[in-house]
Image (tube, rainbow, N blue to C red):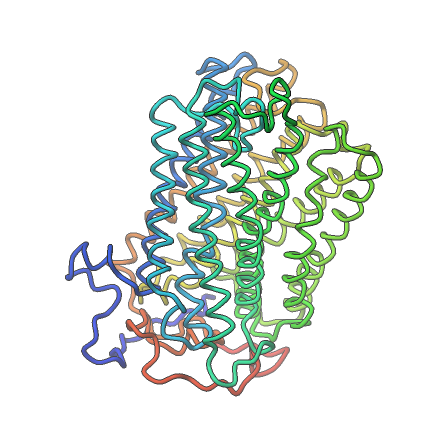
Length: 547
């Protein structure tokens, strides 16, 4: 039975101040707003747009791979498709999705603040993001990029005739959006917490966003420098990465993966924070081992900077360096395992309700665990030699990123949607969509583990005929998965106008954000709240509370 309760709308405690969802003030009020909630909705619209562009590229790729010799495209076109898919999905959806949307919307309310520390900087981050996105869309529409999302040199600096410069500049610009967002969150969390809201009373979502922000600030400049050097070499033929000019292409891999492996946790750490909120709410229990879950977020952020070399086991790096990176890669799995164990322990003997957000949470736990365990295969030197650059890597990456990060994002959107809009979506459709996505995802990517283990290389437009059955299964799963993603888009938009009106706390959840009206007024709180309870202070550890 759903625990959500439909209630009469409440009056805003801010009186005559303008509500953030009021569209009567026109587009100008949105483009120049400094309200963190409106900026979050600008990001929501933007990344949804990019998601469906990147998703369309993925669908075309899977349709092409139905036949061993390729059904639709020339190899050069296929190269541009998977490059576009990767660049857009990684840099314009997965990395900004939860921090920019849910983080922007929720962080001030969760800590009892009226806005972020730097509201104008927050708006600037969205404009920077869109500027970078337009540069990448220009590259795509002008002929595409064929280097993959990694921009590997010397392909990107010398041999590629595609629009590498426009795409690299777009990603370079977008990196500053991440830096500004991370800086804003760190200052806000340090300086603007409500009285009584100590570090160990913070919601675990805040801990996850804080750890992610540290990676934003420390890691993103390295990516920006790397892409700037690519542009410099491509434009002026300075010998940095190209061996013909005296450069070293392995240097680019070190620079790129020093950022891009922590970037994996930029994508998944916020989802872990969402999971902590969902598991406690829908089991009506305090989180098991709060301090362990909190510190595991920080541990992941720290250790993630030390494992980049496991992407380079076959690059010719020292065997001894490979051993160190392998050991550290196993070490970074420990804090992730702590989180999964503590979520499971929280659910044990809880009053679990299977609303749509909880279905996404359970899907996240299962898929992320599968992705994490298969990551240990790739962290082993001998096994990685066989699996490197096969579809096994593709499957592992998507189990973490799509099965983990995207399931967490959808779970969070469904959980806080009544808070964002003041209306509830049709729960039956939401549960159905969660099940369709879970089934479609596994049908899409589990066969890729098998073909990868059997030796099918990734990034090829053709493959051996004996792999066709598994590829057809994967393409069929992609069709189901695409439908699963379209269903929430339809009913969430429908609910904004026709969904039942809800009160401040339809789930019976704990946290300051649930003490404001739904949707919240412009300044969030009429008076600054004072926190006296621990986080997730449910009535007992074994008894659920019906709402």
